[in-house]
Image (cartoon, rainbow, N blue to C red; front, side):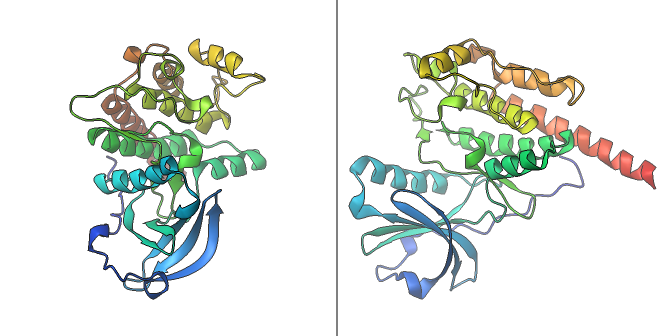
Length: 305
């Protein structure tokens, strides 16, 4: 890792099992503005009254949920508690009160990557390659930590990548993730977002960690072009699946970014899962490119003075 780059350690996770039975929302949290809202959940900017920590407090209305969705909410909490990573959103605690499930999550004050991409596209500006590798090597590190805990994300996309003002990038939204046992290394359920799904997820036969690597390739492509590689004029699912099954996407101009970034994307978007890099290989390659471009930047600054 480059010497001038330092991760800031996230706050220590709190064990939700230690929360007292008489835990009360307003006694323990000062709830502020709404950060986001879904059909059955609302996320608030909040502050823990005990330690003054700023959090994203997710409030889920449990009496309106079917069992499947409720189980997804509980599963996300359980999976987040299994991971201790600089680049995965931390879960601090969770509790139930008055037909609501509350989940206290690490607050990413710069929002998600999708909104940042839209902002840059509106301004007509591209990311520098240095910036791309700075973000991307952190995403790869978070995914490596997930896979090391036998957790497959299954829905990697810009909307599920979060950022903070310390320059940290975090993977979030683990509701669709899958935990592999020691004896099970294939998933079968078709879940996720169509534009980021690997070809093998549209056919029978199962998929594994390499499907997340495909999604990584889609993410890197979108960081370079501000569009999904498979988001085109297709008006039906069949046309989209055919395009994905053939790994058919528009290349971007060779004069904008390095050849290495195009080779990396192409390797992640290999049709056959076995031809894609492993999570460790992807992380090492992204880390190496990050260090190289940080070196270029330091040389440029030095020569400018």
